[in-house]
Length: 325
Image (cartoon, rainbow, N blue to C red; front, top):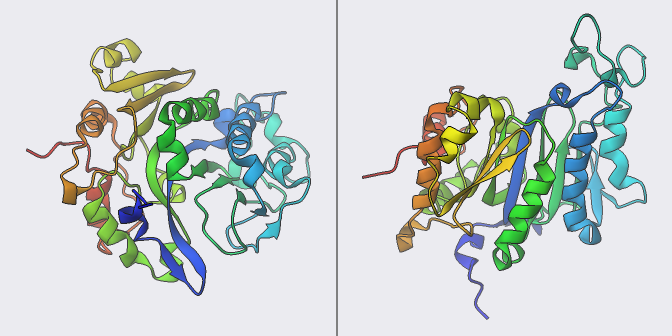
């Protein structure tokens, strides 16, 4: 049987029997850790986001790691608890649970003074010791943080409505900055491995595929880019005139899902590749981009994955804010 996504997977990169660059469906969001800290309550909503993602792939997880650079290990009984443990035991100057308690008047301890017990990232995945998997959860643990998870393309396109519900559940109570979901690649750091050129043909052919790791988005303001699912904070909705004003401008096939701290925009019933070779239109993506253009990020991303150029990468990020004539 022909793989209907072989045209995307042809860009999967295998080197020395390792998968370095793997097509998937990915959902990610980024947030300020202390925005989610409440006195006496810890980081329960961020933990809930993590567990919703984990539960989506838990039966398939067989490896984990505690940082991007650390060697993967076979899953252990308590491996899934590492993320929650690191948050709950954050310390500052030897004081336990510092993240739960405000300091000074109405503020919290500066995040750079927090120690998460030597853990800066928790990754859980299905795969081998080195492969970049299309089934994973990746949770960064620091001040400006992110969470992301990936599923196989086939399972998402088989039931995209269920996937949207899962993403809404995952982000439900979190106070986020932004985020998005859709076709993507999970990859070994292209900057370290000199694989920048792998992204250029993808960017040129598949407009609906994300190329940039969540790490690069986390410091940006506003809405950095648009995809099938785009997460917008309450602060950015207010800049657009508020929920009611924005909702009045939303038309099918775009759907606006309400979240406690913002909204999730869905550009059509299913994710699209936007294959320019087949003239696949992404009108719904452009419709979301037009709505959100006034709050797009004004900061410069530190990435040059498109044509090895930062300017081309920024233009790629902004590709849905103005529809070509």
